[in-house]
Image 1: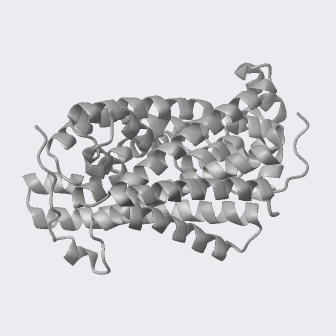
Image 2: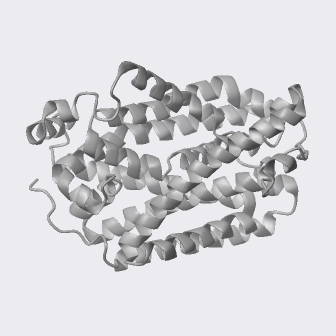
Image 3: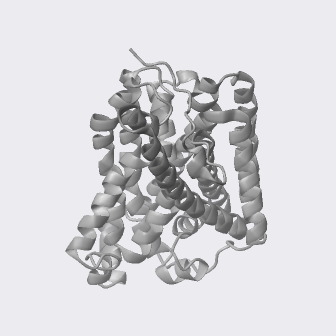
Length: 378
């Protein structure tokens, strides 16, 4: 536990390139076969309503466990400590509300999007304009964050210019959506979720092994290395009670309005499978957010804050640095490829949403165009 003095991040990494290539080849292979099965509007946008509850639960968790969750929260915890827990908890607690208030009624109406549901009940014109603006803002900010993270990751692991990294990521992501549609995106999300859950589990086990598999020992080491008011007290990011309250509400209820999450309830055959989807997703996501703070605190002790910030001031490389320290270059390559797959899958879902909502240059005018709905579920 002496910290990490050297890292290969920033230099071309052969193992990372190998794992990246495997992930891209496998997912594009899936996209090719999905494209052969996609022959109608329903199959393209809703995977023909053929996805099971378990499959959709994995896809939902894959959509939600983005680069912001994997790289961002572990980095926040490593650098800021306690305040990082607000993000981990806030991202999780919205799922029960989604299951009880949104999932079943949304699926029962059998529409393509949440906007179609509201427009079915209220005045269509203003609803579609408001939904177009709101949806575009969500997708824009979500996609920018994911693309920036992917560019930084590829830049560090491949040693290539940031601009070239962005072009490569954008090209591969478009391949998933343009040719495979929702079926391809769903299976990419499933694979990505399985890889991410496997990778984070191994990383957590390796971290706890350094502290006799006792989180209390880990927290004790954090307290020895850093002032208690810096890592175990609020105020690093959130400076007041109202700030914490408003942030918690935004994280919890923000989930209920994420368009790329809501659209997944149209890929299952009925409301029962929609409920099962949320149950499975909550289980997978709950486990993920339970262990991600351990990774963050482990990075703070084993890698040290100074090293994390020297690589990336925002702390986003905390998890890859910890993986390199505990598992060497091969494990770094695997974790980096998982993070890359995470970004690709989430951005692919966002782009599919843009196509579904018919967002052109003058998106407000085109948003008045009616999207053909699915048949109503009985």
